[in-house]
Length: 106
Image (cartoon, rainbow, N blue to C red; front, side, top):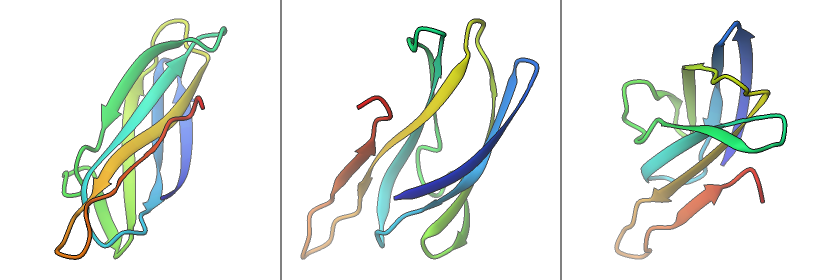
């Protein structure tokens, strides 16, 4: 999965938007995780969003590309953020589903 995103901070509000390209025909579940970090790189807040591809905030653009947008309140003490995700592909008669993830702190 490839993700391209942009962000804007205004006061204590963070706006994140972008696209993700998924190279599987069928995705059962996809969860994005936004991690807020303090100056010691300690996670001080986690927000999960876009649980399923058919979620009303996850808009299909074309076959494998999806658009996302989300606004967050930045917690006090946060100086950075990171994005991660996990999900599972669909299964069919020939193949089992595949779990996939990206954890930004490995």
